[in-house]
Every structure is written in C-alpha cells, then in structure tokens.
Length: 92
Image (cartoon, rainbow, N blue to C red; front, side, top):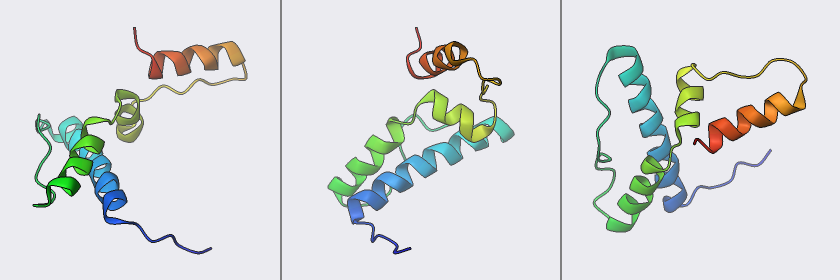
C-alpha cells in the first residue's frame, strides 16, 4: 500500500479535526472547557483558515462517536438504522 503525501492544506484540515476531537474528549473526561475559537495552528493565514474551518465543522455526531457516547443501533431493522442516521446527521 502506497502512502499518499499530504499537502499542507490537507494536513491543516486533518489537524484541525483531530485537535477539536481531542479538545472535546478532554472536556468530557476532565471538565476542561472547549475553546470557542480554534487555537493558533499556523502564522500562514491560509493554513490557519483551513485548520479553523475543519475545527468548526466537526459535527456533534462525530464528537459523540469519538468520546464513546454514541448510540449505535443494534439489530437488522433497516428503518431503525435510517431513523438513527437521520437523528444523528439532521437534528431537528
């Protein structure tokens, strides 16, 4: 398997998502507040923008799965799985 080289923008996006999920996990386990603004990643405005965009686009569903509180439907009922998917990705 050949590893693909990450471009700077892809690395910034990946790190933004990872840092947000880590911050949410620390908030869940230790009660530390999650910063309302993303931390400084780069002095380059473009890379910081990619990082910030990824930080802010982490969904609550992804956070719940990362910290281990996500409810995964059990069984083979397709309707229940669709409803769970809709609740997770399209909250009312």
